[in-house]
Length: 432
Image (tube, rainbow, N blue to C red; front, side):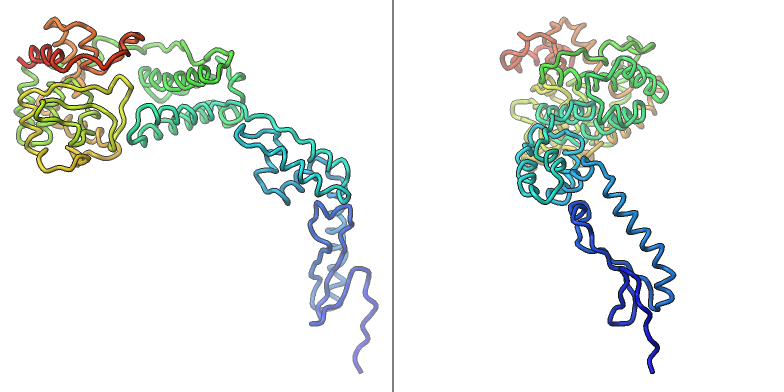
């Protein structure tokens, strides 16, 4: 004769396979925050095991119901929003913040209409009356919007710009904390924050490097203040950095005798020789020359066009210009220019991210075999061109146009710049 099964306690039932289970209906008032009609828990395979586990399982379910009963209406409302509309809406509802491009007020109002009658009235009221404010301008959004602006401004490959902005964001978070960078309104960022960031930078880089980094965040904040017509000052403007600033001895111009010795050192490597000659005779930046495409060079007219292309952008708007080529620069370029497609790189080995850094390292390795003075670098060719133009009587405005520097005047931005023949006239005196 089978052993009689004792009467089962409340909420316990025996399944067809002989195991025991706890079954509890969720109170109607809680079904919006516990999206189930019934909750179950496994108690065990035998009656004795089920009886042993029952007190702890019952206490767990009671605690769950008590917690939900005591949950504030605002928390319940967020849970309901998450269930019906998703995580993004739930976070926006809780923070009362939303991107201005998103209009979600109607979503909350429509959800409240659906919930009417089967959800506590206060919860329905909170959801239906939700009003979201625009997301505040923060340092993080400043960098994001400045990056988008600069991408449109300089064109070309923006990976280097993205790397620089990402590095700046990480430095700001380390120095000021994530809250100050990502959530604190820009209007609440203080001069003390700016000085803290300056001190952090000076602990790991030279004063001039810190000045350049601060220059980026200063320009970014200026851009946002102007574009959004904000009535606030730029706390990153005018920060004092001891030991920073341009000096006449930061880089020395290269002498004629040094140029002659380096031409001989580079002669055995066609790419190195071509780069050195073009840099020497144009005063251009290394990145501008390394990133040239075949269509940027017009050998018949004896000129090259420094402009954004598929390989790289430019440092500034005023960097875009056309430059005359010297006879020896034309000779160097004509050897490899023939037969190339318009977008083919003239220096394919360095037509990649950080390619100008690699080219600089290659050129500097050979330079140091001839010149030990640390103040002489490949960039000294640009200083040399500036001095040469000045010493041969070139007007300052034409010198700035050749080197791609801004004149910082509105009038200088009108027109298409100086004629190529005018620049060639002054460059020929340098080439002599």
